Length: 170
Image 1 (cartoon, rainbow, N blue to C red):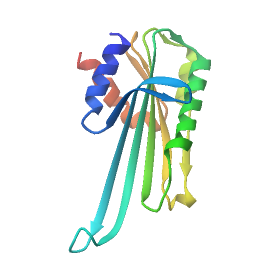
Image 2 (image 1 turned 135 degrees about the horizontal axis):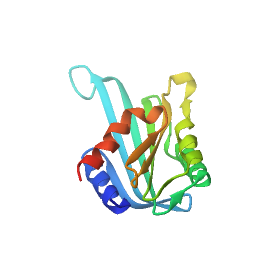
Image 3 (image 1 turned 180 degrees about the vertical axis):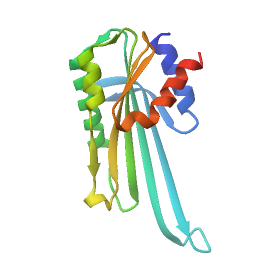
Image 4 (image 1 turned 90 degrees about the horizontal axis):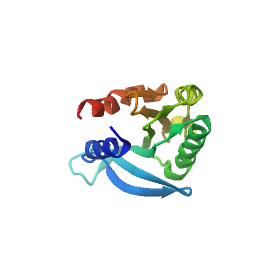
């Protein structure tokens, strides 16, 4: 399987829940897919115009693909890009509950051991106004199409099965 096939399957899987932009440029880097989802929940009395409270959950998915071997430097740059996006995309307000940024790095050849270790140990969690304005975290997901392995950080473990299921659908 090559990265184009996997990205096509990923795009189709995300299509129902996310707004997808192809060839998205951010910080002088072109990504094959950027996907965004916003879920808003409200409680109201009598009429939908009388809202008691509301909260929003945001999710951003940034996908990068490389047809070559990925080393530690590549992963460091990608993780820095994810941190940059957290500053750019997240605008906490009183109804903001959470934002998840999923960074998916796909390679056709493989990752170095240090790159895998760096991805697995990556941790980013930020609270806004002591948590009253919500929080954000970053899921680092490394996908090796050659060995069909997926490496994730601690926060990304929840989404590992989703990305693994795309292997079986081939």
